[in-house]
Image 1 (cartoon, helix red, strand yellow):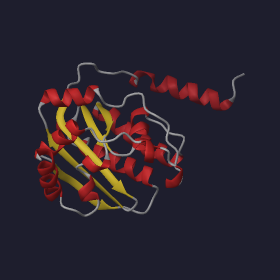
Image 2: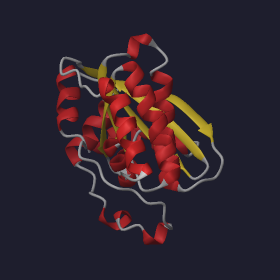
Image 3: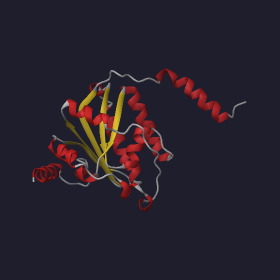
Image 4: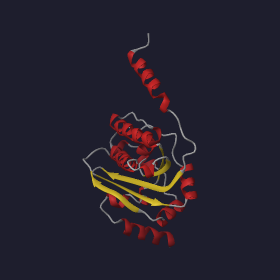
Length: 212
């Protein structure tokens, strides 16, 4: 006989099997979203970009995912190993018409969980409107752990798994497919509002730097 835990897993799989599908005809949204968080605050921004640009971003997004553990900041290897900002992408991001969609305080938690929480919060708000159903959405994050966990859909961290289960439920209900993509914190348009700073001033500085 199979162990009870394995039997439960197989039963859950059988019950969920009718939902295991992917609609290849769902279009890529021309709206690109970005989220960011600190241990005590989260923020989200969005911009409407040319459809071809959105499709290119989607093609270069993270799909395989990666495991994420909640460890101390000093133990996070990706802090130093994170890819540097792409100058071409940085210039493009600065040129887009970004708008703040949310900026709010949160209870103190690990930064990886907060980064994922900010993404989950934005997606759940979008999925409450039928206008945002049936689309592929590019989501920009500056945290490798949250980006990898969102792409993979699970984590060895129970705290992050709770957030991922909530995310999965809304994505399934709205027939939305997210494409997480890592960007450096310095070019993340959601970074200023997450730190109580002006997005407009940040964009002006970025555009001036890109034109220099």
